[in-house]
Length: 292
Image 1 (cartoon, rainbow, N blue to C red):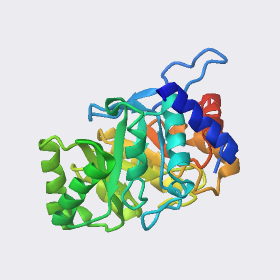
Image 2 (image 1 turned 180 degrees about the vertical axis):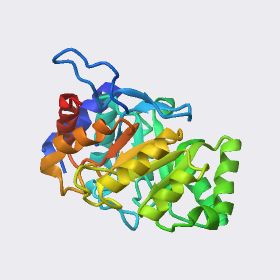
Image 3 (image 1 turned 90 degrees about the vertical axis):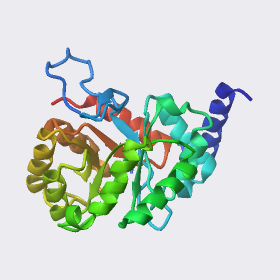
């Protein structure tokens, strides 16, 4: 069965399963003509100084991700891989995964149908010690089926002094980049103290942070988080947004949340975890409707 046939098969299977049924860079300097989108999910964006070019929106895999499981992995291999491939067909080349979500095997399966050089592989490591991270990195490469991880993040940092306590761990990741095992690295933060440390530390090239217009599931209010993220971006760090829908709390306000995020002008790309193809397609349209 050729690629086109398999793609059609996946879509038909998803329709039959009821999964074709939403739990998201900078704005252009000039206002586009009426009717022309300022933003598209499949826009090609350059991630700061990393040298990585990818899509504005990522296919996420961590909705309620915990203990090697998430809402996306619970869809099953065929259904979730079908959704990953649908996103790729629509131009989504940033793949957001994590060890905690148990999502590596799903993206490995997707790589059977998608050229590795066409996608940006982002994953996250929960282990805090240097030896463990070195072992995890080798395991991740095997689980995903890739020689190089494009972006490796230290996952879910909450300690205010993580740069001091995790220096040896950071050195392992930096060395992995020198060996060509990792292209870029950074952190995902889950406290204001950890975020402040990430902004001030010269080590993280990428910061993945929760951002939306109400503060739902964020480290603090937008009034406190936004200035820190802007400061980090001004220092040359890549800012990736997450929790745009506040883990579903803002499902009915995605238009407002997208507008808020894009209007800041410093979110280079963002990730969203979808559970159905119609959810993904709906957000494509909502992004194109944003005007800032």
